[in-house]
Image (cartoon, rainbow, N blue to C red; front, side):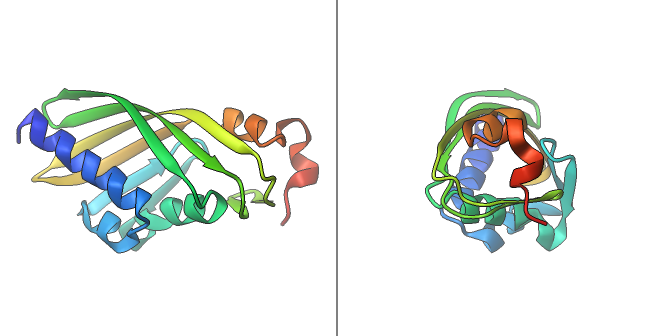
Amino acid sequence: MSVEKNEQIIRKLYQLAEDQKIQEFVDMFTPDGVFVDYSINKEYRGAEIGRTVEVYAAAFPDMHRETYKYYSVGDTVSVELSLNGTHKGPLKLPMGTIPPTGKKMSTPCSDVFHIENGKVKSFHCYPMGTIILEQLGVLENLHSVLQK
């Protein structure tokens, strides 16, 4: 598939996440596709692929992914972006939940996608988790903020 076509696939995937169209987001993946969120070291497959979009949408209802640069080689697309939003809902993490802080975040992120036959085979997301926690004002006192 062409570099331009692969970039269009990723732009559409981001738009579906922005629009919170979870099933359509999931449908963009191959049947054996995987989404890995490295900030929490969690892997999602099948219907669970949309889980991170749901979690971020609940915590940051105004979530916006600002893409800066696309790099494409063959069937691999890498994207420099930032995750932006206001923390108005619970942020569910594997170690507990951070209640809303009302603070804004604008966090650097890098995503790497592997495309196979017009669908996403793998999506490796590298958000800067410590920066998110620092911008929410909870990094220094994380253990007392988490609700189990």
